[in-house]
Image (cartoon, rainbow, N blue to C red; front, top):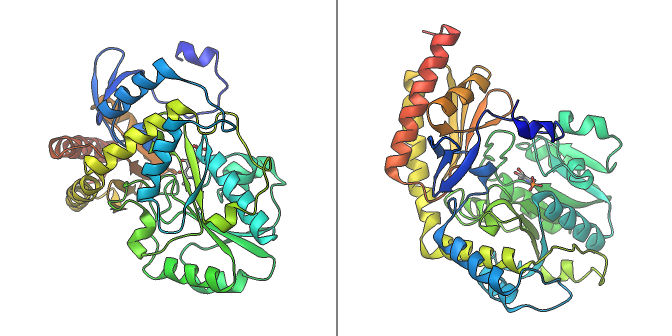
Length: 393
Ligand SMILES: Cc1ncc(COP(=O)(O)O)c(C=O)c1O
């Protein structure tokens, strides 16, 4: 047990690694060992650890102003909002700040309910939106939900890839549909072509607010700025968090103006929202994404990574499937992945799991070809070891 555990509630599945330094797509532990970071703080280190632009921006801001509540104006915040407006999906022109993914989902659910006046929500089987009570109500996994029942009661879950069920479940009580364009936590589940377009059409025709949770899939992760772009669809509300603050806690709920305008002053707020340090870090993160062409890099290196993994699938029987878009990739195994992840750490690569038997890779978008090649070698090695352990020939 690490000495940290003496003080902490037992809330996280933890790994035997103590990270003390990071740069780009690599981190180092407190004994100086180097790791390729395909975990990236669950996708937060999107523009790389200690990105130069982000570090410079934070250093300069903390000398000037650290605190500025939303009730006052601030030029650093304005600069960020102007940059964000340039990359936001058409029509999502109004923003609410918050500090974590779950909070941005809470805001989205409230905005949609206020605008439509309807409490009914459709969410997806396998969907993950966070663990506060509202976000948990639209998160599907029983393991997370069960101990906290009753949650919001007018939520129906429909199978992520079943067009017909969606039509059946929609009635006049439904004001909101919420989904991840690509499901992350459940194991990088990509919707069949046509599904998101169909849901978009249904929501438009029935005047239902469509929320895309792009917390994991957004900001270039999948090789396009927004995962919804792969299917040429734009939601009415979009949730962002993880990498938006360059590593600093920040989240956003973007919405069509008429939706946010249905809220009255005071009906939603958060003390830390729009904090200038987070805003300057987020401006720098957007500069990195746009000026360093990281979205293109995610598309190119994502393909290289996935092709390499598909090659490994041919030589390793324990691999059931490799799937993903850009640098949001899953390797589904026939067995539990925990030992393999621990082996990864021993071999200098950090990876995530999604459920029991899926490895999830969310490396920083600054990763380069040599690092991906090295990651592939390490994954090859740990797969071989796992096959020996499981006696798979
Ligand atoms: C799609 C999605 N929505 C919401 C969340 C919750 O974000 P947070 O952990 O910052 O509350 C996550 C976190 O992994 C996520 O992947």
